[in-house]
Length: 133
Image (cartoon, rainbow, N blue to C red; front, side, top):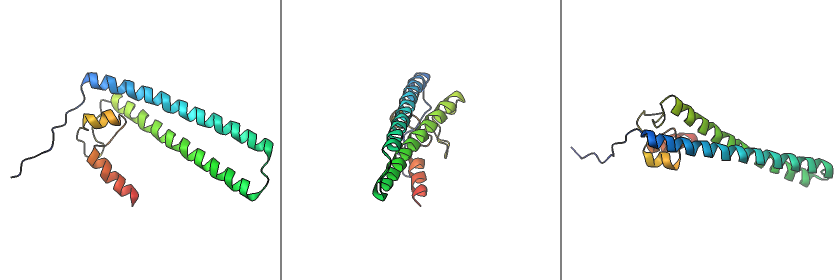
């Protein structure tokens, strides 16, 4: 029988959870500020656009592309905010650190890099492959 090279992964300690909770809360604040800044900028630019009135088809296409891009960026930030809130909810329910797919503990180095991670690296890679299809 071949030796098992997998590292035993254990749940985060109380100290690690406290540190990760602090990181998640700080990240949540940054993401909220990013969303608000983006929306303020877009509102200001939208108002300026109305004042200057779009004159030709090229301007209309450019304005629509810019709006779509801005909304896509806001959507990405909102998705990140949702993931952070989900992670904080898992902490409150004592479910934080377990992979939502396989149920195993997520490695601490992954949680340090991506504290809102809900899947272990192997399951995340499989999930991303499925999303591509």
